[in-house]
Amino acid sequence: MLKKRIIYIDVIRVLAMFLVVLAHACASKLQNRNGSVTWDVANSLVIITEVAVPLFFMISGATILNSKKRKFQ
Image 1: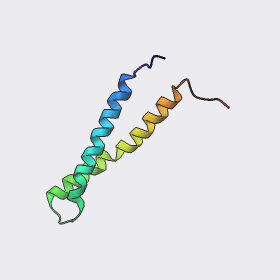
Image 2: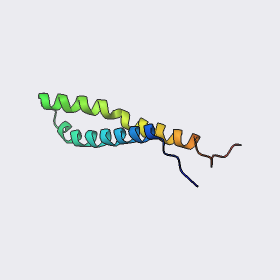
Image 3: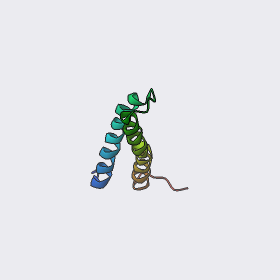
Image 4: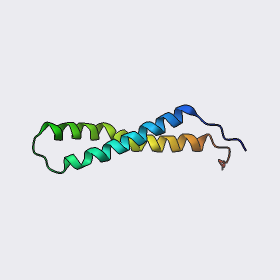
């Protein structure tokens, strides 16, 4: 059985992976709030990267809905 790759799904997946890595890299800077610019930048980046997990869920849903193994009830 040939599997058809959907390029835009792969691009979204790579973007979501990058955002997860960025969020984890910035998380260590948020331990102490000392009012510095570094904390503010890290906090802003973590807020922006919060979209990564919903992207993974949407990718899963899109690939399940397009699957031929899906069962109808």
